[in-house]
Length: 142
Image (cartoon, rainbow, N blue to C red; front, side, top):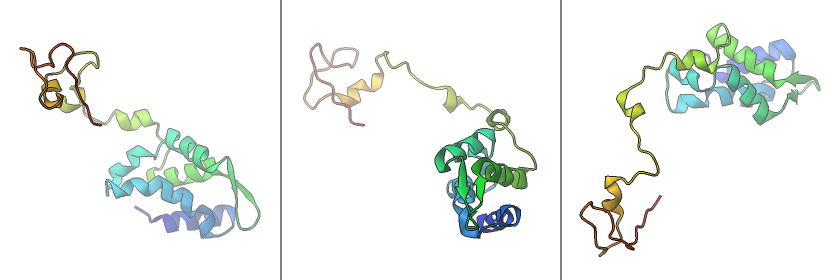
């Protein structure tokens, strides 16, 4: 994995300016290294949608130190191509995720959940089903 500084140097060679012109764009792509410090971090931003997100965040173009406008999307494409050799879609990454049981668990929001008794107000009466008695208060902290 190349450090963002070297990605920015590559941008300078391509479009002119100075490293500081491009460093924030390349750092944005690699911020995910903070949560996963191996090449899998790239699944979060190194794809076509990530390149468009970069453009949404930084604008359509930056003006480098030489006064030259540089399309942000081209800088994003450069970063992803240098890391991966091509620009995948997010779907290309997602196809590689093997669904796990914990990903499939969930509850409908309109269903009573047994955990409701954990959230009953102190001293509140519970019905036989563990839910607050009719008219009983439920306090839920988020």
